[in-house]
Length: 510
Image 1: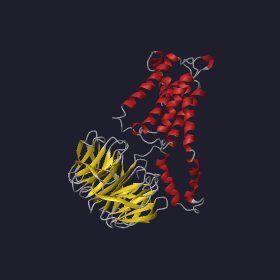
Image 2 (image 1 turned 90 degrees about the vertical axis):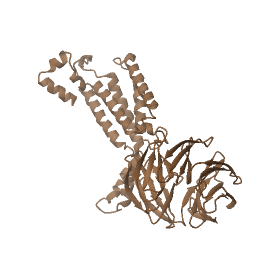
Image 3 (image 1 turned 60 degrees about the horizontal axis):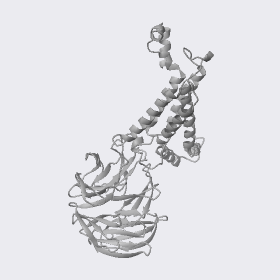
């Protein structure tokens, strides 16, 4: 467009005014070096804003190496050093500002797992769903099964994109650094047509590479509506409910399999377990499981323990085969559970008898049951001890896992129900449903450092990559998204009596 505008002005006889009269040198916009620099800035900016960490890293590294190593007399060190220093300062500034620029995906995910860098996982479930729904034969070539070509390509697409991006950025940087020589060795007033076409082709290729690198969706939150027999699917970016997945009667808690490829949702009153794909929300299958109220996998992935609150039983499964190993009748109302780090023991709160039970998973026997407070619910392992949230006695207690002895009580509030550690272990979070409060505790002292007012019975919590807490509000059809820094929260409408919640940041919002 700039080149076309320049030619139009030249055709109108305005070239002497704008060029020879030291005005805007519009014809310079068609110079390969200008186009190369423009392409570099534009494409790096797009990669930064789209949050494609892998391609962005490739681009920055290749451009930096090219600027350091390219031989170019017209682009000496006096000009290169400011570019390199400027780029370094921008990078340092972005990292320094990561705390308040956390809406920018690249910065938001700096501390996340080094996986899904290109975002291919965001689009692949759509193709997988199309494959599963397509015919083997029919419609000429076998309908959706022509996606076989795409499936083969997908196994290597990250490699192909990385290679193409490296060549692209190296080529554009070379054009930018070295410029283009016209006939007779000069560049003033001339444009090397071959170099210009090469650069423009490179710009076009940059667009194709960006299109071939899908940007990951903002993620999906799954909220179990225990009073509405459904699972709300929420777009984590827009904070809106997209749809509801119907279940049978009363879903309460959800857990991911050790490999993260499936979600298990316990429909306790229906005696069934729904198995979901966490990326697409598709129900893959249903399993007959007795009264699955609360459930969790052992740290080593060997066991799945399912608490049957209504039936007064704790079932231990072989997680790999989903085979029941042993059933423990425990009175009464087995509620939440927590494992020892070595997976040798599981600890279960018994709401009906105000006790905590310890089960040896090697010998498959109950080690002890001890009173810990009225109506215990949430439990977690913390620094060699157990923390138990007591709804009836309004406190959090520290319990010795060897014998069940209570060593300390911390008054937290009426209806203290849930206790969880933040992903980095720097905060212990406690919810009090009756007081409608969420509390942050110091993990070393267990003193309350801050209290947040979350109305209508804050219950289960999950943690988003941006540091915010997603909290189900059990006594309202709402979820609160709490910013622990400002103390403000957003509200999302869901189904009746929301309980368990699971955040899937890699899921496609649809």
